[in-house]
Image (cartoon, rainbow, N blue to C red; front, side):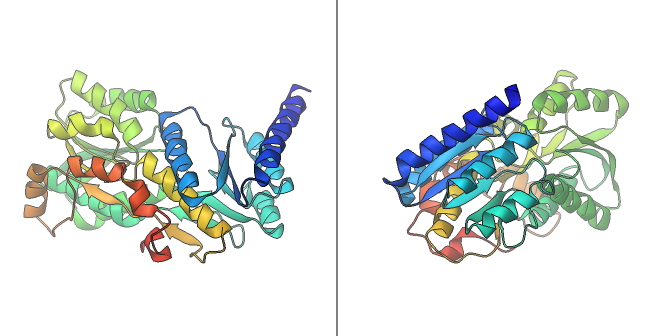
Length: 341
């Protein structure tokens, strides 16, 4: 009974929001997030609200609170209220296919964020993960002299982004660095405490470990804190470009990072949805422009032993992380919303 009462409350909340904004704004975008509590999603929403203002649309942010059932219900409500477009961060890409198809049949543009979902005509906002992961593999391997043991933190098996980044990393190491051994690959669920737990095992199990690669900075922060507490001097490579990685760049342990950035992700996704709602033509699979981050000192070492990796400094990366309005604003051409994979 409590579940159905909660769902009725969700229905009324979404209906009330859309009813009061429909007259003021022609285009209403519904966003169904996994949650709106973690720092990444809070930052996404903050920049997404800026994009809504820039593009002259209204957004309705909804939290699934980690529940697949609630996520489906929220999408159903947005369909019934005739949202102009629906953005969803899928908890289960296969389970959502029926409701996403239903939305498209109702004439609503559907965008799956950070996850490639085959729902027949939907759009997917992705990242050039394979090429970026390959570069992080090269940088990490070169930083340890092309030989030795490394370990990898992934997000979760079956998650498109995590799987793609893992594949790019492991395949590059296998093909290009035969003397680098990946001794462990462990999921940490984008959770710094889980990253720390995994690292606690690694630092005691692998005394010769030289580096840790992670598909997310969030879990890498937890792992690096454990390694430092244990007196282990390791090299790190990651994704996200979070400002919190500044200390690791400063002491030289962070070899390379990839700037996606929560603010950029939030603004870009709303920009894509707004353009689609207004009838703009975009490819079904869009890849967000990213930047590889290295210090000049690390880049000198990394690029001395292989093909040059183009990069920006950590200082420049933080400027870019805040420049999302200029990078993805309404004045930009449609072609600038995506890069090739």
